[in-house]
Image: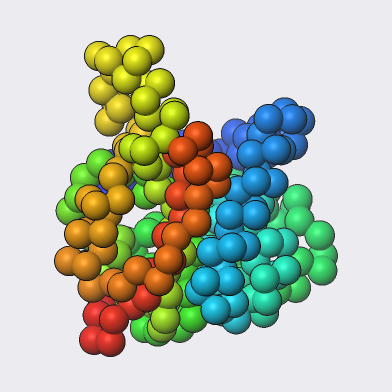
Length: 224
């Protein structure tokens, strides 16, 4: 594992990716969470100005592709480090969706695309796994190189019931060891400014209950 690689990034073989997909299809709580998360994503894409070309990274099994297309995206470049996930994504989406999608293997820090080749980067369910600030900044730099305009990215927030319950149920839990990291708005605001972003807005999945918040970031001119 390299210094810029998460422990779970390479774990999904085809069979494991298929099992992950089935779990999200069969469990009603997973389906409900995806539906609510998709609504949050639609609000964020509206703030971003309905970008036409989007890099979805990491794309997983393509759960947000229909949402992106419904929001006005004409072309999706879907990137994931797991070849198994990319295969499952292509098998599980409708042909009408797949005509808009190009899949590429990629990590978040080494994106094999030309500079300024997409309007926006759509990054759901990644950055809350990363407690290393240097690693997050490496991802931001890669995003700024590839995207022309905006980044849509989700995080886990401290001002949520889930964060409070974590501390109440077991205050000894080290969240870094379970690949979950919570942020305050003030912490992220300072981080975004330092990284060369303006905040266009944010939208919450379920305010104060769910930890999920999606920020829409404007790439400042000259940032890369």
